[in-house]
Image (spheres, rainbow, N blue to C red):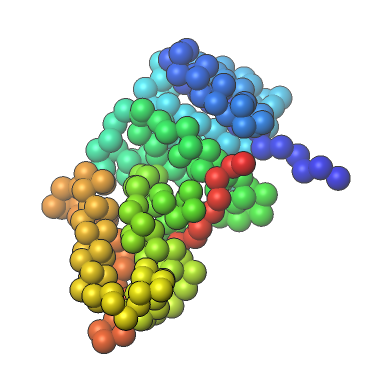
Length: 245
């Protein structure tokens, strides 16, 4: 028996972007409908239950944040992705506080949008709830998605570190294991200081990519704690997922 396909509705008032997103997702064999405003979306929902709503913030009439807030109250299991040109951290936090599962900044990467849809699809099918502080590795570990929906490209070494941490989620990971996975065959020739530099640069990359101010810096930190004389532990949820085929 075939599984019921995920049904996605895009609410976007820009017809060109709306058509482009529908084309991209439909090309991936996803079931997609589009609307131009909140009223059209509400009317559609009466007869077409939606699994994932992709909402622009700057809609005519009711904006996307208000729609997200309503949907979270009335459709608790629905996946909600916010699309916006606003990249400031406070705007992202507003989106998440209104009930959105992800917050993507325009111009939107098609691959990143597909990855978010895959993650939400799995949550919906399992009937679970997404962890509020979850981090996700995509594209074989080359992209790190933060809890605020920001996609960060990783170098080979950063990818190896994050993948190892994901595999040992919630446990202390020794420096020796991290170095072994980074260096592969040349473990004995690997300078351990390169690992410390890599992690330091990764922390800074997270903060820079989030566009944080000093007052919000704690909210954008990489939740990676140093365990003295042992290694590191990632203190929040981190998962690894493949892209939609």
